Image 1: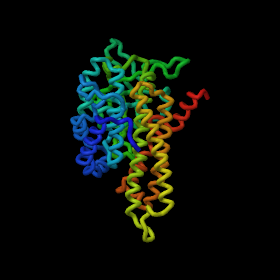
Image 2: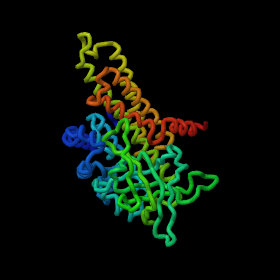
Image 3: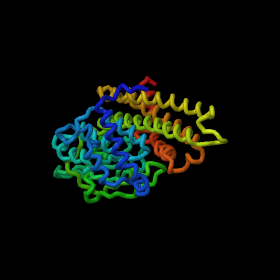
Image 4: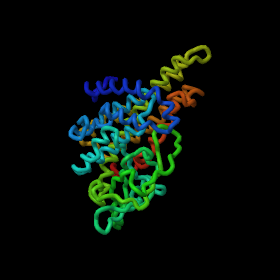
Length: 385
């Protein structure tokens, strides 16, 4: 299908990323999977290429891009190549916008250039051992010191993407009790330096998929955080999260749509080559019908994701539309990749085939960033239900 939302600049970026991945990622994929992370130097190479700072204003060392279109191109090319860029997309397109949108001028000048170059890697810590999608139940707390110069942070977080390699952690914590009428009140975001005393990286968690994207438990035991590291207004974290969660769900939707398209591409090549009963698997009517179904679903997901991209670029992406995009695209990716794996037969279950990695990697998309059930709740509420 003809593309309508990517211009010549986006396509030049696409070719640059495609060439880079072929040279810098494809040959190293297996060692990264075994190491459970990509090397830090790879992020610096992405930074030097301009990938991490593509949406960062030029005055902070970025490319000055607007919207998530470049990020969408990156997601499509990563899926097409069957590789990983570790936590780079989470860093650049989900977490970095918090600094850009809510940081003070001093904070932006202090942190953003390093984030764009890959010298400073970010993680964001929301989820806690007893708190998943219900962010209002966060128990990690921070109290202001008597002299007002710093916060003292205590608590624990889990499922933190990039937790073992991050330099800065955006920690969502409770700085005051929640008002009776608003459980979401009293939450703040503190930017914690990973070298701070009392900050500990716990277990590196073993996941079904995303094996080259590190995920960790974090703990905070009396960590002193300067008041200058408060991001946004005290007690107003939920409004910041609400704005950026729509972007996060857009990013996931785009990645899911890209994964579905990549699965079909891998499967077309496989079924044309694979012989069964003396014939290519592609010659069977069932194969044709299954891939026709997959292509139709994947195209619908792509169009929805691209519409969400355009709304985001125009400042019109609403929480309910982002939820629709995430819900539909991630559910489609799950169905399409499952069908494509089935067409691979036993080889589809082998990790050396990209379809197997896609199967494992995309399953979490229906969970993180808000579960499919939470997305349905948001959509239903917007419909007045």
